[in-house]
Amino acid sequence: MEGQSALLDFIHPVLNKAVRSISGHYILSQEKRLSYGGREGLYFIGCGGVGASCCGPGGCSYALVPGYVKQWKYQLTPDNLPVTKVEPIWNKDVQKTLQGLIKGKEPVQQVNFE
Image 1 (cartoon, rainbow, N blue to C red):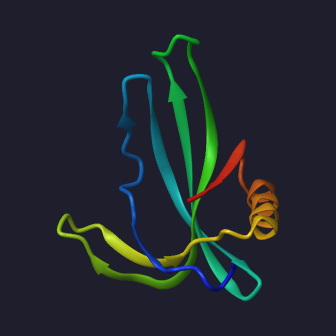
Image 2 (image 1 turned 180 degrees about the horizontal axis):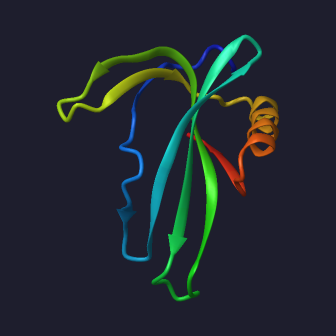
Image 3 (image 1 turned 90 degrees about the vertical axis):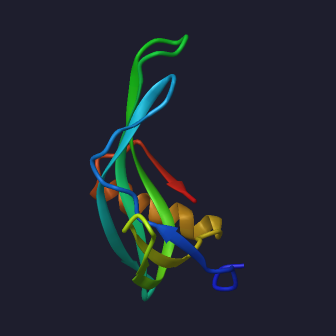
């Protein structure tokens, strides 16, 4: 149901700050936008590392796509983080196309849609 999904508030993460867990960490390093079909998609570039799991160390770079921008940074959270109104991208064909476009521009192994 592309174009008919509910809009969501997306809180922009702090870039270049490691988020740690028991088995590793991830860092979002870049915030970018991509035009497609007359719309603008928001995505982030990040990398994750696994260093304390049963399977040994490893990692990957990835893109995280919250959705299409509907209202750019229209408010701040109490912690001063910007909030953008986004429309999630549920259509699998559009996801596949955007995945190809992002992988063609960015050195990422995977593209994840929220």
